[in-house]
Image (tube, rainbow, N blue to C red; front, side):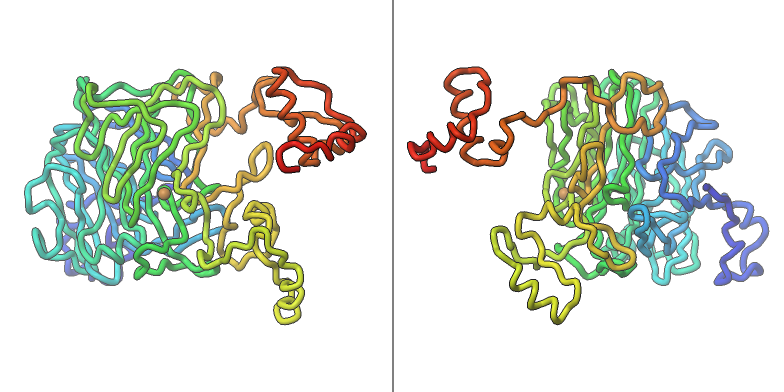
Length: 471
Ligand SMILES: [Cu+2]
């Protein structure tokens, strides 16, 4: 799905006569991606060797090696991004996608990046976290003039420090980041590095938030805090690719936060360490085990762990509103309210009206309510045991013994060995749904340390008047 195109081939804004043939040849062609699928890791065709990353629902930008310099071409432009199957947004991004392609280089590489502006307003490019000459820092007005529509600017520097970085505009930032303009930059270490481990799987994604009204396509850029779409690489669950690994792999996950709030990233089933930030590798003596690490606005974190527990393990933001999709936060809590009479009245005015959540919100996950065109259910995602009732910043780490080295394909759902899945406690027919029956079972187990046969209805009826704490 990667297509190549010549820079000025389709750009009517620039007249061919204004640019000499020599100048045209000097600019590498821009490579465009039209798919939101996770691309296979890009094995370096030249230059120093490295172990490439996998960008979730993204791809790595190919480069041209020219006289020892790695040349990339990024085109800032309006894009159509699939947020989840059947749900698209009109964003701004680079080379056909939001986020833009991941740039991967090696410590010590000389890098030249052409940035072409095809937006309706000016932009610039900032290389977040990197050591660069001041004039390459990309702050419009401070270190360079803004890149006007139709213009191409060239940035050139040496990637001095290995690590996980980002790129994003530093011009009308509020609009341009709210529209999805961002990308990852990975500088791999040159040879072995004392603080950077060799890993078998290296995943990366950026956190971005959007405010898109259900049924519409464009983000509201004035929103400051009340976003309704919490994305990883401009994807929402169940549209976010799973992280598929082989049991025993050392796994690295690099992520950066370009939203307006912090995200506590939580992994199930394993302990990890934060091995690096956008400031560089964390010394081994300064690492400690975690299962959740908070990622503040403008920060990057890289976490590492040994994936030694087979299964389907949730990886998600621990803010529960960030694992939901487009929802109205003005919805009143109706748990315990009898909404039937109200619903009847409103239905006379609005046919098909449904009151939300009188037993909690879980029913919303299962409900097949007609949705407006182009939106996602607030929460959903079918798993092997039913709806996950999740959305937003949620994915699954799939650890499999059979997963081949270098195979990133989705192995499907985990087939748990018999006897290892939480199960329904069989009770006497009818007792299962009785609060008195449940209470009685629990009480008996606590005292006798073993499971007794469920009490009969007759026994329950006899015992009930004597009472157990408040019944
Ligand atoms: Cu979050």
